[in-house]
Length: 287
Length: 266
Image 1 (tube, each protein chain N blue to C red):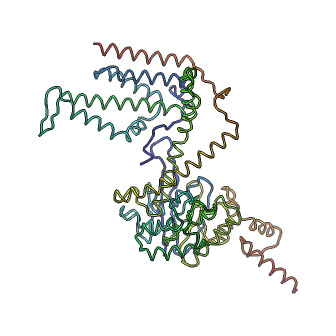
Image 2 (cartoon, rainbow over the protein chains, first blue to last red; image 1 turned 45 degrees about the vertical axis):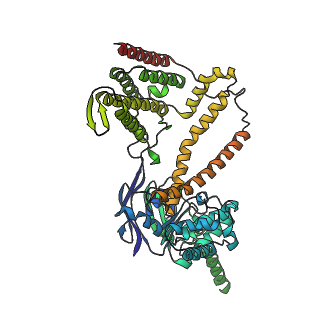
């Protein structure tokens, strides 16, 4: 059963002015419950505009967005409930922090939902644990934390609302490789615990390849493809034609294939590649 | 909400109005304002209106944008009109209900004021729509440069103005972004009770202040890195040069002004 669905979704910016631009053009897709989806596309391909439709921040110029099969714009007054079900973490979310303590800032969303104190506390401790934020940090001012910690506090603020769909817009932008792996690891942990649907927007194929079940590619305001990870990466040439790149490791294996060493399946993670090679080597050793 | 505000917005183009020397445009705007306030008959306003429409057509910017510029100021316009409607007591009474008395003169004065301010806003919008903020401040600096003799920090003022103008759109963008982020966390900004909205303003203002200070700090560092030391001995990349068309435009404006004065005396 699809949790999120779009039908002929189209969005036009600044309609009727000299700056008019179609940012999302006739997008139809279905996202199933519990999936981990990677969203990719070039800068200005419309991916950020698309995800802002999923929680009703933008209203489509035409077309529909269905959450659990219901049009989210059917009743305008209920749009706030949609935002509790579909959580959105913006790019550089640390700039939205405003409270005096980490605890209070994470509590902002849950409080808006009208939860009681005990439930709020339980959720904060849970998400803080998921994101590796130590308990003593919760009473500190968020403004004295490091950049990576601030980022995690901001993500926790949305995660604590326990949305059924969590959307993260470039959660690793501007972080060093260690910080990037850390955040992605935490998101994975959260996914395993809650089994919630997750959408991650990212520029980096390597980021996404590691754990996305499916990949959604936007190109020039249109949906380029939405399919299982391996099937998307199998179209490497098309992807590079629209300015995207497949992971390094996939390229290496494509070259190997061209030279006659075929491993059958497409390879897009380091771990998988390592196992494949080791297996191949031991087969040879045994022969 | 925020996207309705078009003040200070610039629409790039290459129409005659776009190409005019910004110094002349400012002087022309000044004469235009004098023209609107000099006469007090509808015919005088008519002359102003003709001039405005003429200039707008020349600028090739859709009329819709000018109506849009009025939108955020509509409450002020209506308030002015209503004040005049109720508080002008001279002339014949045409409507009476309890303590409210509306006279014929009040009606004509309120319409007059409404049109006058509308024209004023449209004319000023035309200047910012067709002149990029940078050239505009350049022009202001040049026009004010005689004041340097009086030890006025003209360059510094112009620099402050251009920085402020430059960051208006950035600030709007930032506000919009923070608003979206807080809305995603369930903050009631467009909806909900007044107290809830006021409370939620904190969640927008705090991040906005923090990022503004951060940006100011970064900009100051960037300017120092490029050895900015104020206006002394500073030359400019784009020199303002006046062309015959500027003098023609000025002459036409002056003709309108004189025409306006004559019509007013009739």
